Length: 457
Image 1 (spheres, rainbow, N blue to C red):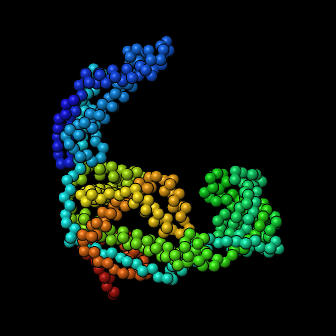
Image 2 (tube, rainbow, N blue to C red):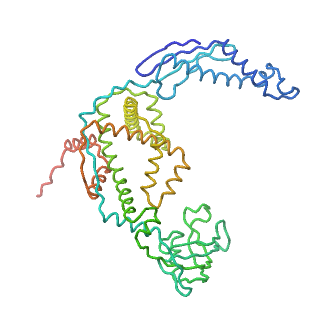
Image 3 (cartoon, rainbow, N blue to C red):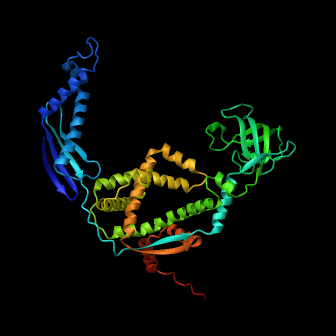
């Protein structure tokens, strides 16, 4: 194999690679010998088909398979030999190839830039510490209580009212005909929530245990069967039971049902959950403040193919016209993401930062504890989605890097209440006005000739 540097401009290197025909032929012979043990053809016993016959039958596909393998192996060897730190996927441009010929191709490689981390000592940022008021914790406690209602049987003579739970079987028809999903058994509805069909709950108000109730409701617009969408449907309902809610007593016993040690522990868990939600939003503001300074103070050449790949990922769900319309802005965002990613990763590697499996597990447990009443949902999510745990690992790594940077900069800590936090988050999330466009508009308005006043005669 012969490797030469064809050209080198900035971060892009083009290598010329030549693999002689003898090497290719040897690889072909090896593959044909392997296939001889596997191929079965009419008139030959398994393992006894001559390589020449196999070549005549499958020559083109075998050659393509061999060339593909040679390209992978030789391109990796060329990159290793020239000691290039690649950025993204290299591009291969075949020049000459074919049976009985040398393989000649160009390898276009974008390499990672050298990154010199500037000192962070002059950077400034504000970190917020939110005090969660007792009133907010108690409101959330009531909400959890309402979400975990218990019900008891009503007397057979008592009618159902809004807030009660009605259990029933139903049989439904559209234009007198049954349809898929037209029957239900033991359906439980808390009247007033309108979770079944719009207006369905109201028609069950007043029913009693063992009643037969006929009612009309309209199937939803987004019904899976298009022919049934918006169709008026007759429901024949057999009322199995009517229950009324039991008012939860918010005490130590209720707290234990919710997975806490006692009421104080449950309140603390709720406070931590709310605090975590505010902290997440406010930390994003602090983080952006830091990242903006990092981006501004570092100059890096970015590999073109990384930019192209990032834009492709960002815009994969967009229509062609939308991609074109936001082309400049998408490129700006892609460059910012890549630049910051490279800088943060370099800083993490220089400081030997790593994330252990124990840290990932601890973070999952932290999330579980921070969501009273939803522990199983969180655990199931990570158990059923292995990629989610991997993504979490990346987030922890980034947070480690940001935490280290915070320790190096001038960080002002502000204690605020939830009202102040809401205001800060709201201001941050407001759409940003493009100051460049604003100045152009103002300039245009100044240069516009004002209309003359019409004199009265």
